[in-house]
Each structure stands twice: as structure tokens, then as C-alpha cells.
Amino acid sequence: MGAGPSDRSQEFEAETLTFDVPDAAQVYHTLRAAGLPILLTLRDEPFGQRHFITRDPAGVLIDVITLIALSVEFLAQYADDAVPQGMSR
Image (cartoon, rainbow, N blue to C red; front, side):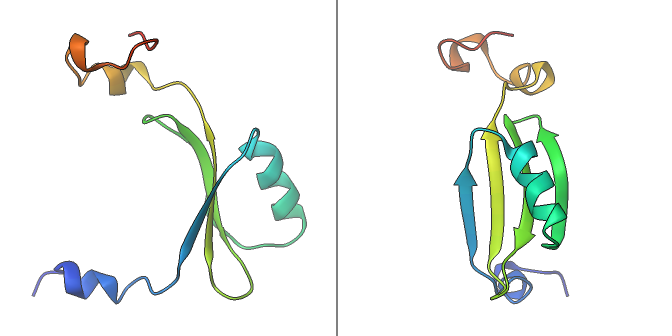
């Protein structure tokens, strides 16, 4: 049997907090040095985020992000009139 919506909800029981910070890389290195578990390593996403995920002692997932430019490949998926003003291909 496939994992439907109700099945998937059992996979992730933790709450998630997202923090938008000026420099996710700096926070990543600080928290990693402090010994927090890194569940998703620092990465740039084509949809315009540099982020990583850690977990606090209570089990809450923490997604730390910095907004970055959308990738050219990501923007290429959209019609010209669908690209937000100020963003170019």
C-alpha cells in the first residue's frame, strides 16, 4: 500500500520552525560547532533559498534560511509574464 497523506503524517511528528536570517552559512557553522545535529546540510535550492535543518533538544525541527537569487533553470520553467518583477532570467 502506498504512502497516502494520512500515512505520511505519521512519518514526521515534530513541529518545524523556520528562521529567515541574513547569513544561513554563518548560523550553520556556529550551530554545527556547538554540536547540534545537522539533519539537512547547508545547500542552495533552485527556488531561492540557502538553508539547512537542525533539531532542538525537544525534537523541534529548525529550518534556517537565507533568501538567494532564483536559479536560471528554475526561472526557465515559467512564462515571462509569470516571473515576479525585478527578477530576470
